[in-house]
Amino acid sequence: MTGDTPRPGPMRRDYRGAPELRRVDLAVDWHAQFARWFADAVAAGLPEPNAMVLATADADGRPSARTVLMKGYDELGFVFFTNYESRKGRQMAANPNASLLFPWFAMFRQVEVRGAVVGVSRAETEAYFATRPRSSALGAWASAQSRVVADRAEVDAGLATAARRFPEPTPVPPPPHWGGLRVVPETVEFWQGRASRLHDRFRYRRADDGEWLIERLAP
Image 1 (cartoon, rainbow, N blue to C red):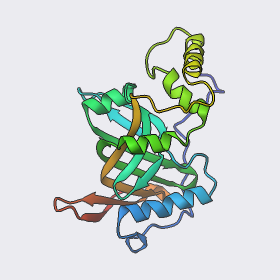
Image 2: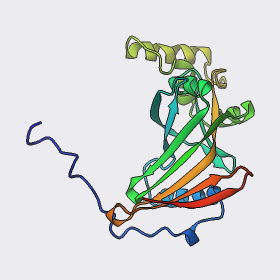
Image 3: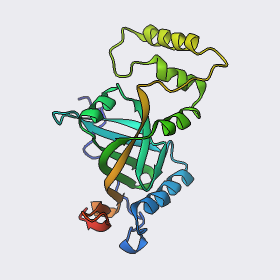
Image 4: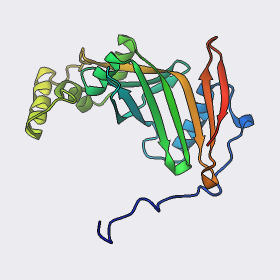
């Protein structure tokens, strides 16, 4: 390395002055607590506050991760949409478990979710797809996501083919290989950065009887 190369080792922030997260501050269920923090992230003007890191693993347990956009959440879980034939789609079909991470660094916060993956109804997929810009809808038909392509021209040609297939003003339906998935939480952890790396961590964990337990974790 040269003297001009940034050295990651010394890089750190102490989060001094960050707010305390106490047990008494938490909502009774993870869904209400996430709603509070998500509203905070939106109000703070964070870029793409609904962006989340989705981690999956294949049938052999080899992991991979990427950023996707959450398009809905409720007491059942977190919903996103994808090409089922993509790498993540194939992995979740073979191993229907996933982890999500909302990295709200500017607020010294993150939310980590672990749970099972289930499909949403086709009606829910169609309702969301109808809200997408036409260009994005055509893009869902154009791209064989995660497959090797020769060059950008091949991608552009796919878009042109989709546009000819669905000329204006023909509605663009969702492709049969595209739709929604829901991560149904088994645990949801709320992490608040604190000074000296002694962070506040609280985990909502679903017990065997279906009730949610709240546990403080060591930082």
